[in-house]
Amino acid sequence: MKVLVTGGSGYIGSHTVLTLLEAGHEVSVLDNLVNSSAESLRRVEELTGKSVTFHQVDLLDEAALNELFASEPVDAVIHFAGLKAVGESTQQPLRYYHNNVTGTINLLRAMDAHGVRTIVFSSSATVYGGQNPYPYIEKMEIGSDNPYGRTKEHIEDILSDLGAADARWRIALLRYFNPVGAHPSGRIGEDPLGIPNNLVPFIAQVAVGRREKLMVFGADYDTPDGTALRDYIHVMDLADGHVAALDYVASHLGVFRWNLGSGIGSSVLDVLHSFERAVGHELPYEITARRPGDLPAFWADPSAALADLGWSTTKTLDQMCEDHWRWQKNNPQGYQDA
Image 1: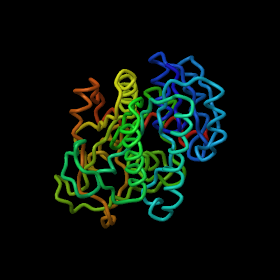
Image 2: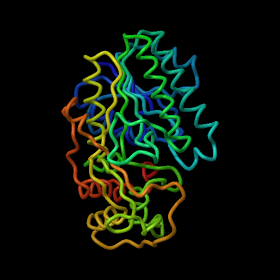
Image 3: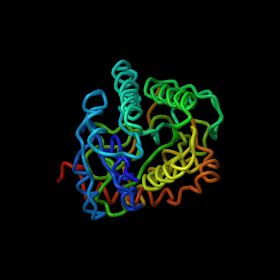
């Protein structure tokens, strides 16, 4: 199958491109490189021995999108491209809605115009919001409480309406939880710009000496050790989930929703101590006040993905941290080291 991956040079995108190539698919990547590096794709080609066609295109550029689809045949799209920082989205909501929602509408219009009606969309557990009990299941009413999550929610609504209006579409909506880890080679991994927004890349930068210490926001939650619980998933398991969803929708018409998570809640301190085991020594941290809006706990019910796709996570938290540390240790400044 010829697959176009938007945002394919990013963290999850590059690992999914690698997995697609290893599964025998032909891959093109669309990315504007605002939050990523083309070096990731060079390394994917090195690891797989296969080539990737790259298009530096922004989804807001409708003319360039249509030129891309007109220039080469595409069977399906896996759609990662988008802005993704929750905190930033609260400060720049118009930018997030325009980039994520308008960009997706442009993509779908170009796909439809060129007869490409199979898409796997990278959604997020943030669509569940703070009102739902955990574990989260796909049949719950969604309602995110931040602009980033609402862009994902709106795109899910658009895709659901599209699937209802035109029975030719094959659509997978993947709501995944907290991706961490890296390819076991240590050649590709997470390389956030600026201060990391997520826990594990921040710990990794503390471990490699780029940050002084980890700030733990809140140790007075009603959880086993007082710190917040989240569902962590190895990025390679997540990539496998995208390929499994693509294979499924390739032979099933309609709109499908799946959680991709481990179904296990791990605390901030669980993750920190796991990373310390990978590094081989303790890491400095400080307990501080809770952050506004942080939930005490949530994790996935991944049973639907197992039943429909035959997919489940295979990597433990220790394996996630070992692989993430191998990447960071080998690339202290990320892809800038290249």
